[in-house]
Length: 99
Image 1 (spheres, one colour):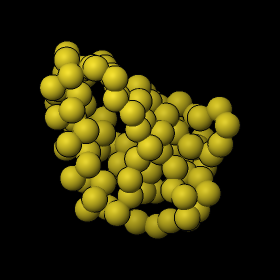
Image 2: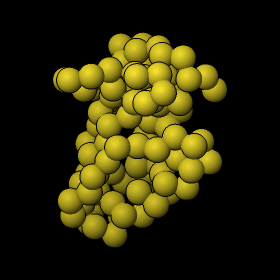
Image 3: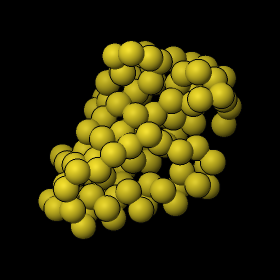
């Protein structure tokens, strides 16, 4: 997986539930879960994968919501790593009943 900047628009063509960040080359998504435990469980699953990829999201959690922003800092924008992590997040969230 490369760290070459591909851009948000390239990523969004592969990620229908994501959108472009307003102020930089990044992609964002909001996940909504049944409760705090489900949201925290999702974050734990993603944290383990992020550590494997050595690629860590910018995110926040309030009760049942998780807000995510992905960009590769070394490339100053969106790369294949972001798409890989976003796809993992989509699959993990779907398996946990997220909206």
